[in-house]
Image (cartoon, rainbow, N blue to C red):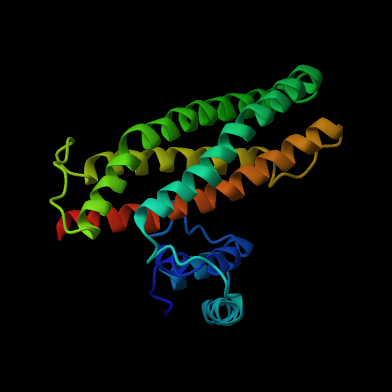
Length: 236
């Protein structure tokens, strides 16, 4: 790895690297095409120091699943069981907190809280539709394609012209989710609790931050590992 390596490629090496990038606020997810050096410079960070920290973390990390070499079916099942299931549990829970906060505190900051509820509502609706499309259409085909290739059987015909077509759609939806996360963070001033914050407000902000962190890893596994590997299979 060098400072010209993209954030996406660095993140793809290990979840240990992902955690370091997250700690410095470096967007390896939707902004993953940026070079490490450029991304660090934009934030006033020393690229060499961050790279050194990542390399040291990789040396002591160990024990993680290597998703770059794991069977694609296993990776797809991991994403569904870990990240899709998380969304199915948390999206309604966070939504209920959002509704309660807007109802109780909406008069204190109507502009910010109303906008937060609107952005979150759009994000939730998009994500719920998104994961269903992945599970019902794209992921099953990727798994069949990978299994056929691994077993030396003819790969199934692609029903959508190229596997890159639905992948491009999923990536555009990922960008939309990333934009919503950025706006929520700006609206909350990096999740700084307002003066009127009660327990529910605190739980809402914690839930939104946890959702953001999980989505970053979720999108990373798809954009930077699952999808490129699936496209590479088709090109063989």
